[in-house]
Amino acid sequence: MTITEQNTYRLGVAYVAVSAFLWSLSGLFMRAIEADLMTILFLRGLVSGTTVFLLFLAVERDKVWATLKAMRWPTFWAAVLSAASMMAGLGSLYYTSIADSMVIYATAPFITAFIAYFFIGEKPSRATVIASTIAFCGVLYMVTDSQGGGSLLGKGLAVIMSFTVAGLAVVMRKHREVSMLPAMAASAWLVSLTTAPFASPLAASTTDLGLVAAFGIVQNGMGLALYTFGAKRIPAVDASLLTALEVPLTPLWVWIFMNEVPSQATQIGGAIVLAALFGHIFAEMRRNRAPVTVAPL
Image 1 (cartoon, rainbow, N blue to C red):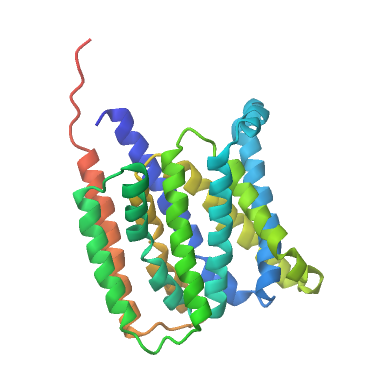
Image 2: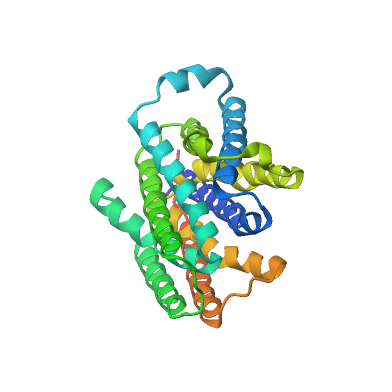
């Protein structure tokens, strides 16, 4: 691996890891906002879509029109998958416990590995397989918790979220040459368009409007942008593993700041998942710091 490839990988890891941290704040926002689910989805989509599109304008500048004209089916599929993951993800957090939703979402790396292997021929590294296995053990332990409650609808939406996030990671990896920022902006607006008939934005309080604005800009807009920049620089399974940092972090923030205490099984299983993920990142970073032989000029 050349120095350029090493730097690209490390930058991709950093971008995706930060995006996962921002996305892990979703539980806090969902518990703090009192508006109904459709209103949250509608308003958040407007704010985050505009945020991402403005970032796209700033990044591309004189290439904006050319990029928009060059959009093809990968952009379309990325927008659809991202929109579906947003609606399913927030719906899951709304209808079931934060911990239950995140436990199911932790299966996304394994789904990504399956999709990436069969559709783009990307074989996961040994470190990725080991980390995935350990993380899966943590998920199994978390599932032993029978006190979490939550509806079947919420858990089903978490399954949909896992599949759509996995599909999005593979599309972005397969089409690294395509600018996906327009797709991410379009996905947020698509969420707003889909939920508009069922939303009541005029009934939202001033506090809720402020929280939804922060939700859209910080948690979703910046998270989507960083993930878009990072996912194309690293393997699809690695990107999915990094975003799985949400699994232990999301219920952790709700526990600390809103006193929604997860069960002992969730705490222990989440710690196992977190250890696997950080161990995987450390192993990959060490491997990519191996000495590089530079050919003499």
